[in-house]
Image: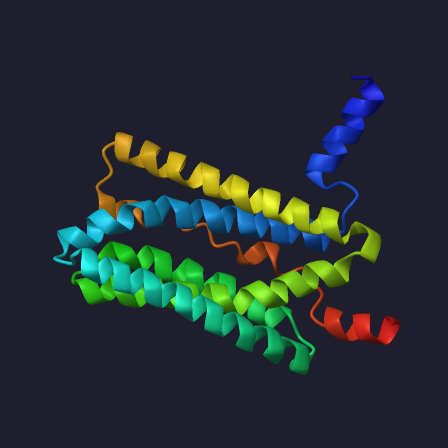
Length: 205
């Protein structure tokens, strides 16, 4: 590979040609998934230690996915009608960041269930408005690249999270405290999101 080709490849994977908001949302998703995947692989064992059985675990995950599906539709429509994206994104990331460390003080199974459902509610709130921000930030010819860059960082975070949890456990950290070991609130990466990007986008068309 020529030096020029290597530089172009690095630019492709660093998002150098993308608007800052796309890179910031990608970074936020990276940290969000690192934190999520540190916690949720440990939930079945933690729930069982509190007296929750397989039936409760299955019901919790079924309800969690149902909430995400329902809330996504509402949040997307509400964001379109209000012409605002940023408040939904900030709330969604912030609510998840708050819920995760609280698992460390869960004392009974329903605490775990409630926090899991709250986290999925937050995911549903942020997803569609965040995707709209991504789409509005770039011209049509770059949209696939913008979404690919964002999803790539999201999946990279999902790969790093279990490794970080394994490292904490290898160091002797018990399971509940490990839930607060790396909450990684990604909100600072979202504060630079243009607050009225949807309105500007509509005016520019």
